Length: 128
Length: 415
Image 1 (cartoon, each protein chain N blue to C red):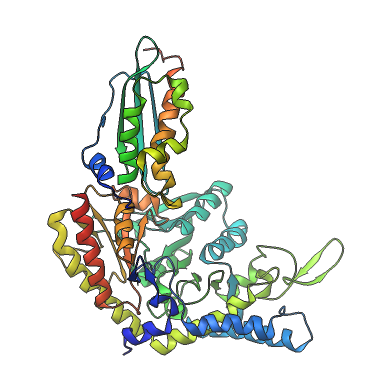
Image 2: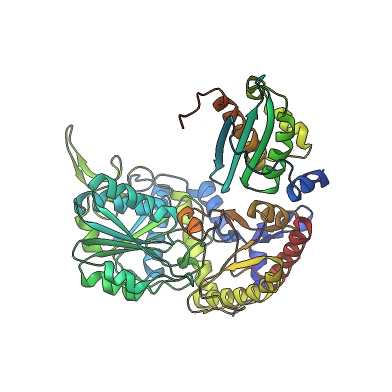
């Protein structure tokens, strides 16, 4: 099985949900200092507390960019509590490529960031 | 002149296959491969005279001690030091630099003093000085890098003053392959009474090293980047300076006599070698030095330069596909070969270096990607990280042709 499958390359070249949300309910940035990867995830909740919009920005390798892009699609409709419960296995299944120990951090960087953003959705907004 | 195709055969690992393809090893700035003679020396020690040094009366302890101390003398000759006691064995370059930072630094750096390093240092020649300055309330000054990726020496000369106590500088950047004008830097530092430490981790494997000619006060390097085993570093220091310094670590072997509440330090160099040293690997380092001398450092340098020129000519053809060469003095496919050696870092627009290194690995070509333990430099270059090829004397033009195939494949896959 190839690391750079067609799906991975497609999400890398034409990323879905790449960008920023102007006034996100929760936003977080995480980096992977050994690679120099940096990813930001923005979440916008609807009135029922479910994700209406999820976007990501930043730089990274094809694996972290594709994984984060695919993940943002899965976040739509979930509550922050549900996002916090997503396990790493879900990411591996979603990617469906062999992830070597050296690339685990790349695969999971988006999820770690999304969980942090989900936690911050519950934090009181700063006064403007 | 040696034949790189023939010397390849002395390195068992170089006949390995990676992903079904013959290994092309271009990560020599991380660590070099080891010739059979070095590997054999390690097993010979363990099979025939494994014992502790400097303490046993029995035959094997004597043999081990002699072989261990022989390496010290060999290192002394290799870098043209004056005395064997100027050579201290550590675990690696990092520990050698920390030894100076803790032992010399604790005694000699006061509040308000200044230490100078450059913008191209490896973390191992930056973080120990950051920490020393923090402990002592001293100031760390950084020699800036110019647009052509060489150091701004006039700026350095302006930084020097009576407050400057130490200049610690690399002899060859592990990211850029750049070799600063050390003799100029050292002379200027000595004029204001500052000492100079040279981080020779990269250079010592590629160029002749002469501490007398350089007139540096300290020089640090590792065995593993010059054919020797991991776990052996060297600190060279001028005798007068080392004798005034206090031990860095305390315990066995570094003492002359011990009372219940007080101890008396051993002589140089052993006062800096607390505990059982890395005997097997120090002894095998001797075989590495012998191998290097047989090839000849001047020959290695010539070969490195030929390969670098060849690689630059090949890789510069792909600039129109977003490839950038990160090479000091580089301008339209040429560079000043008196200032750079053996390393070619590059980036490809829109492709992360980890993805580049993965495709190269698929092709059997081992390169490094990331920060190369030089995060401030990489960030200064406005890159998130880089890919790096680093050459040694067992590499051939055919190896670079294989790297070019991998480069083409990378561009095709991601663009």
